Length: 133
Image: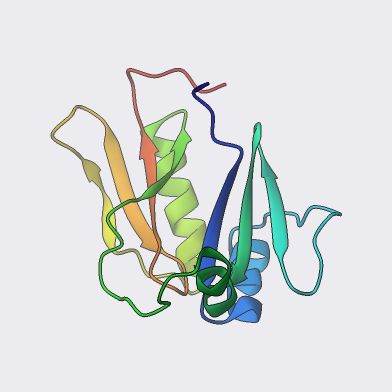
């Protein structure tokens, strides 16, 4: 099997609240293929989609119940510690409260965490060992 991720689909409790977070807080642009039922954001070679949690569970034939830590995080890497600080400051001005304030971390980088309306964790980080595309 080829190593590839094409879509990451987040099952969300309130589609409108999630759209507001990603479009108005993060400033992302909705892809033209989005519909009223599902929203797509094109991200450097993959797509992030937002879809109602109950509908996603129904499609996968699993129970939609579940809460707490989801067992994974998503990451947005930046070019410097200053860029992390600036983005977190901008997000704070839009009402987003960091789960973890920006700080140097054990692996040698610098990071912060925020959560979307469904509690999906986003690491906002600078990794000095990786070059961004």
